[in-house]
Amino acid sequence: MPEEITSLTQLLYQLETLARKRDRVSLEMVMQRVGLRSFAPILLLAGLVLFSPLSGLPGVPTLMAILVLLVSIQMLAFRTHFWLPGWLLQRSIPQRKLLLALHWLKKPAAVLDRWLSPRLEILVSRVGSFVIALVCCAIALFLPLMEVVPFSATIAGLALATFALAMIAHDGLVVLIAIVITGLVPGMIVNTLF
Image 1 (spheres, helix red, strand yellow):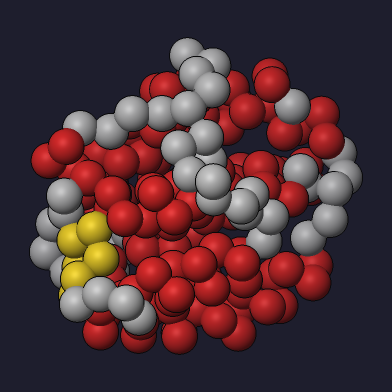
Image 2 (cartoon, rainbow, N blue to C red):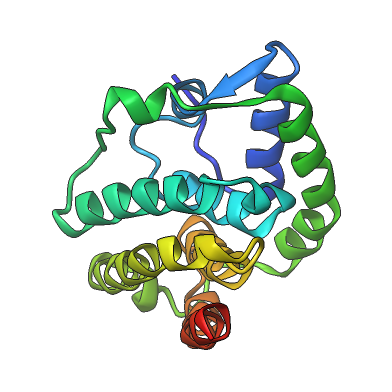
């Protein structure tokens, strides 16, 4: 039984431990590691992938958009655990690239974990999670447009990761920050397309 992920550092450690044992790491392996009841860690993973240098790889923003959309829709349906199609679960990345991205994220993760704490929990309650899922769906729908310019999905990834951190830490203040970051996404799209 996977342990509950309660911090960003813990998630990165779990992924690093998984990656060190394999040449390639699939989404199915990641899900087995963090658990099928863990909506927030999977959203966090998608956000971190988009925020990291991995977002510059062709197809990654669109793949993460599909993942975020599937997870968010199932959150909207108030499911207790989620399902993903086999073709998505089999997608994988090389160990080296994953370990580089995880190393790049370690210091920011440690800083963020010290700052997070339970507060304004109404914003991450059942109703709050519903609103978060709606916003994440909207972000996912815009991600394929950002595929055109490498690394333009970084702000969307930051917004997704921030929403996920808020849910993991039960921190409503972080939800408000994520909403502000989400407001920057349309500007990124306009800059990307024009």
